[in-house]
Image (tube, rainbow, N blue to C red; front, side, top):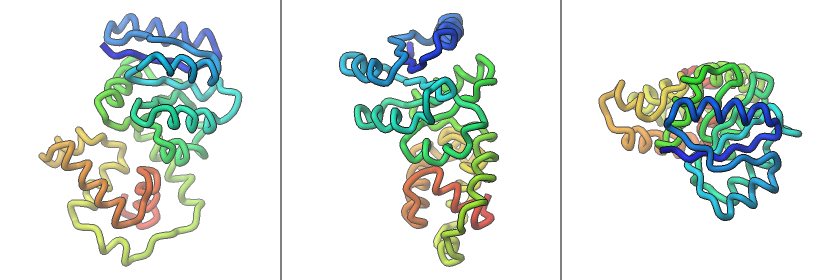
Amino acid sequence: MCYIAILENYSLFCSGIRAVLEEAGECEILFESKSANDFMNKMKTEKPDVIIFDIIHCVDDGISTIKKIRRKTSKTPILLVLSTDYSDFFEEYISLGVNGFVFNDASREKLIKAIKAVKNGDDHFPPRVWQLLKKYLRTKKVAASYEDKRMLTNREITILKLFCKGYTYKEIGVKLNISPRTVETHKKNIQTKINARSTAEMIEFAYQNKLH
């Protein structure tokens, strides 16, 4: 059983999510909150497996709230429900430690898949996220050099390309016949070599250097 905490100030959304998860029978709503303060108070005594945060009905872009949550817990996975209107914030959400995105038009199956992925320690960013992030990153100044590219091994470049396509650690492991832990080690090595602090910066490097 996966225990869920929902942060959402739109009651209809909470009702819809609850119905979907209860019907699936694999998740239980631990608590729901309509404000960040109430959510943080409940987090003092409750320990959810996954946090679902609806950005769409948030009063702002949600960044300040995500920072508060991450100061409270650095390990509990955060799954954002959002729309393509928030693509300019994707990079910052990821850099703050958000573990996955679910678009507001996603099916029940995709929501359940996303919850399972982040609960098991994987990231969940649909291919559409990287397509939108690519458009945003292309407007930014190229920061990496050709010498940076040469530091990466062929295996690291292959793994980097798979991350750009939205593959999870597990999916990359299956494709390359290696363990998810080995994939994670390769990812850490890539980030160290190119001085990337987050997955978003790693993807940015790939697109800037035509490694996607």
